Image (cartoon, rainbow, N blue to C red; front, side, top):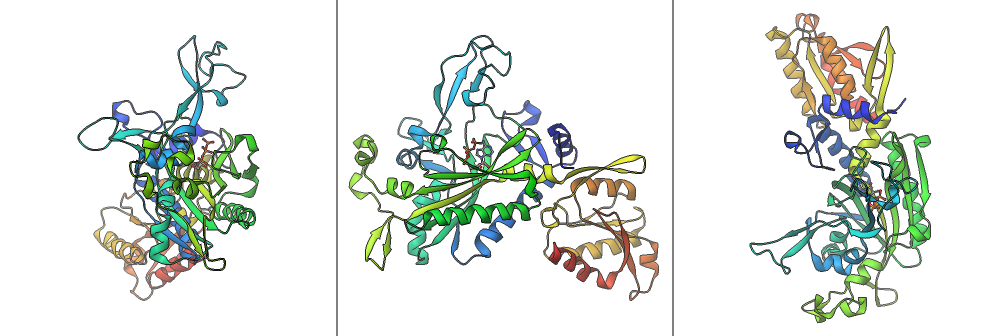
Length: 457
Ligand code: ATP
């Protein structure tokens, strides 16, 4: 059974060091979270799995790491300044503020009153100032999506790599949105990470490419352990589409708080490359916006068949890292009856597990056990499969409980037999997280056992 209550999950995340409230000792900051020792490993593993699938395992995608601070003109030309808004209402009774489309039956979520103001647009972008003078000229935005950094670098990447269509540019990075009502733990936050691919295609093949990417992305989430009965597709109705989209299909996940978006796959057409290639007046923007309006960079592609410059269409699979971490945790969270007690175990896919193996000396104060454990840890760590932890607490029961709760697939126990046997026959106990089965494995065969285990999962 996956987690059915967010409270259980939030408690586990705090107790075991996955996720903490940001600025917690000063009362927190709403919609901001920090990832702890286990959280950072899980998050990095999820991002690495995405990068492997989207960049390394393909031959038509390049990577990018663009800056977060963005010239305001980028977001003016992209349409975000004018349209990246949510409808905001105030409750006249208790003075709280809400996103209008998230309220049930038009009632204030706090006091239940129906006396609300008319919805008015609220722009979600964070502003800051760049340089020592804070005036109208010096403000910049924190990017609200990583995508614009990809579009504005389209020509740079094309020139540097000589790619032919179709090809993609992938990026993982922070995005910021001043959400009116952040909620549901790390589901809706103000600072988050996105994993985005912009896949450029010839106009005309965009609809097929869109369908292909939806299928690929759905399959990828299943490879991260999300079961098909907790995933569903949602084709956004025309009236809900973002300003840049011709069609968007969302991948929804059955979170404990409801069935909600995990990833959106949009057909952004030639909107963004086109908008950045146009003069301000062509977009209805005031002429002073671009100081050097004649030098607009044309973000086009030379089609050698027609010998014309064209603006490619783009398909964008855009996934939230934090929502991905939440979905993977919800899916993995399991409570099992073992004898008279309940075991909490995170049945994470092994490639996502924060700790790949814990090496545990049976007793703490026995240097001979700790020495062997340290050597085993070092040799497994060198295999490069992720973090291997020497767990020198001396309490094997507690160590197993902890490693079940953080989802460590293998625990390796070093006991007196291990050190008393001759090196050729020395063995350890390996315990499997999911089955709790224990088996003796020769120390000399441990590295290949470990590699074999991770190559199958
Ligand atoms: P929503 O409708 O839930 O506000 P959205 O449709 O605005 O999301 P997109 O602009 O499509 O989201 O962003 C792509 C992905 O980025 C989303 O599928 C989600 O995983 C993630 N994301 C967007 N906003 C947030 C947020 N405030 N907190 C966490 N993740 C987010």
